[in-house]
Structure formats: C-alpha cells, structure tokens
Image (cartoon, rainbow, N blue to C red; front, side, top):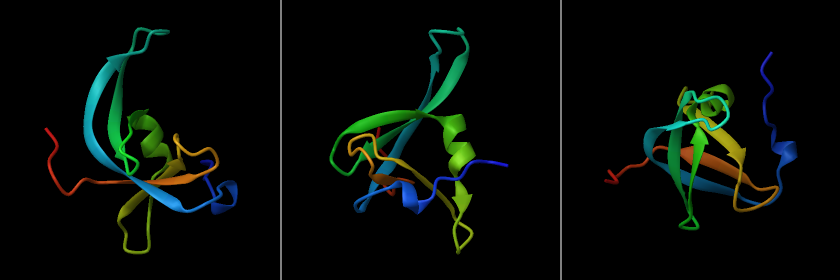
Length: 90
C-alpha cells in the first residue's frame, strides 16, 4: 500500500508551483540517469523533483484529473500543489 500524504501533515495555505520542463541528470551515488521535473513556485523560486516521486504521490481528484501535493520546499510545513503550466516556457 502506498503512503499518502494527508492534509493533517501541513500547516498554512496551499501554494502552487507550475511545471516548466523535464530533464535528465546523473545520480552522483549510483551513476544512473534520473528524470527530474522543474517547477516554478508562486514565490518566483524554482526547484526540481524526481519524476518517479511525483508518480508515487499523484492521485486523481473528483474530476478524474491527476493532482499532486508535496511539502513546500520554501515553506516548512506548507503544502504545495504541482500544476501544469498554461504557457510554454522555453
């Protein structure tokens, strides 16, 4: 059974981060190629996260759209919703 992050783990308002792109990097410990997604936080900061982690925590919402919440890397204890970007960022 997958571990699900529940709302009880987070404090404060839900922030959002929009998808920018996906790229590959080499894991310095294993030498394996890892796919990472880059997101732009609503506070203008950017971060990347392992794509396989997103696949593990994403779940369908009531409209059967995929939704993903993670801990906010810029706000300890905060909740962050990862979203698709409506505009192309090159």
